[in-house]
Length: 253
Image 1 (cartoon, rainbow, N blue to C red):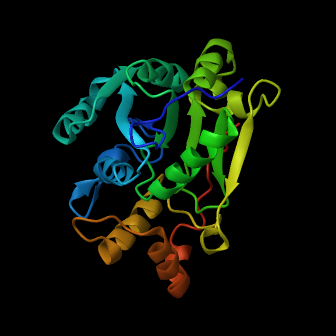
Image 2: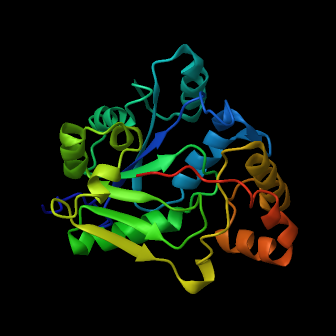
């Protein structure tokens, strides 16, 4: 496969960030709308994505369930387009959401990561511009800060050929597990950011408590939290690391 053109007039390749979001989380229902410094987790994610130079479009992909009307209403307030689709078949939801964006490159974002790093999106975009890879992920970063970037063409193939439920629930396993079909790449983060054991995602009450602590300490209105400041805070106060160190991350194929 080969990468397709997707450059803006300023010469920077543009990507579409698609956020998968739903209220029906098993371990922490409604987490996407839980507050951090007075705003929802989803609001903070959108704000951080808008700091990425390469992101030209943001779409929220949620479900047809009535319980997710709250997400739709939040997106209207943020002026963010919404696509509604299957709850279980997230790959299919992504596939159809990708039809409403102009970019030929998709950045996958999950709604439990209020510290997703916009700089990683720009790093991956710069790489894929020259590499012609079909899929790129960030390696070695704290859990909850990374992203995945892939071509719309790769997404189309995965949506057509993936059969296993795990492939369709988690969007990208089919791509990652077929290096014979797709050109796969990983970007290793600098040593200053290489803390893969730091858990900065929100999947349980303890995760949420930690993110509340971080946002209360570091967030300032009008800006976003710097990931370097988060790492420095947690290394200086290791009791923060222990708040959710016991949480087992769900395995993805």
